[in-house]
Length: 57
Image (cartoon, rainbow, N blue to C red; front, side, top):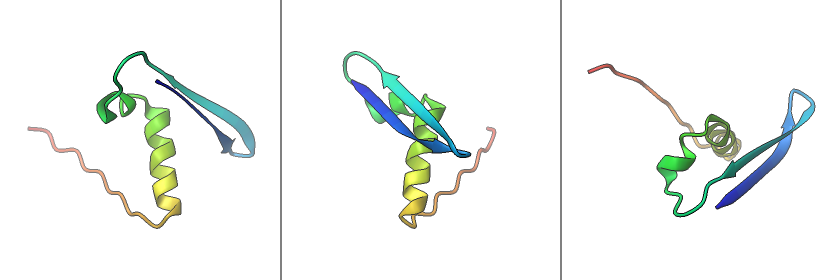
């Protein structure tokens, strides 16, 4: 699976690429911080509120 995301950040063009052979479950895509940031920004633009909390056990 290959995903290329292009856009702008701070007025500069950026390109993120996810390239992994075989099955790509969401857990694999979530390992790439750039992919996660892109998805969360897209959700935010659509009015989706996402909150994250980390709790040590």
